[in-house]
Image 1 (tube, one colour):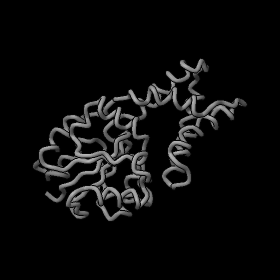
Image 2 (cartoon, rainbow, N blue to C red):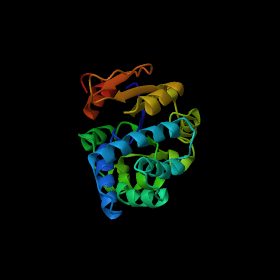
Image 3 (spheres, rainbow, N blue to C red):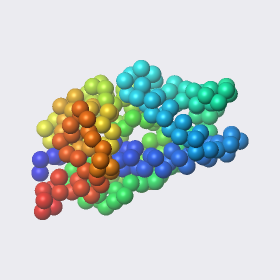
Length: 231
């Protein structure tokens, strides 16, 4: 087998962040007694995406961005809100979100005996630990590298340098990065000199300038890549 070490992203790779985000946002509005509308959520979703792009570029810290997104959201409706209060209300539910991506347990059950499995994720430390433990997926991984804990975010070279430096006997040639984000997982992996596998569940989406070594639509598609066509 070509690979020995597999670096998995969490959100929308092994856990369904989209489902968690939508449910957590709705529950937050109930707690804060704010009328929920689909327009409100879609605006939040777009603002949140831009905030995380800034975090990936190292322009703002994770904690600051998480509070700022709610302030920006409600400012668009002419309201001034306490971003920390909103973040706390949202985070309470986000931490509990353990929705899994399809086939994740079957795939990890197959891989664990033969590969060294690690998590590489951008996010808040407590949230990612809670979700992984709650879903039971933490049992598969030797260690989790979380941006909010180590101080650097994907795709920064410092993030991947940290990972390389904290995995015993790390070998770039036998390591594969697996994730759904072109801008953080694939870009970061390529810049770190690692092979990459892009999970893209929409076959019509183009990968643009960041060309992964592999492209799959489902976690199950990893099996023939890692074991060969007879795997």
